[in-house]
Length: 89
Ligand SMILES: [Zn+2]
Image (cartoon, rainbow, N blue to C red):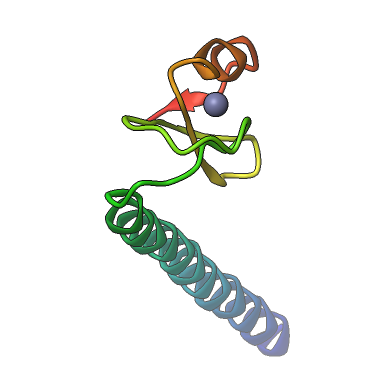
C-alpha cells in the first residue's frame, strides 16, 4: 500500500517535471522565431528581391508562409501572397 502511494507520487513528479521542460522548450522555440524575424527585418531594410518574381523593388510587403518562413513580395506579387492567405506582418 505504501509502495503504491510512492509510485503514484513519483509518476506525478515526472509528469510535472516533463511539463515544465516542455513549456520551457516551447518558449525557447518562440523566442528563436522572434529573433530571426528581427534579423530578417534588418536585412530586409536593404533593397531585396521579391520572393516571387526576384525583381529588386521597394517597398516589399512581408508575409509569413505556412512553414513560418518570412517572404517579401513586391507590389505586383502582393495579390499572389494575398490569394494564398499568407499572414501579413
Ligand atoms: Zn514580385
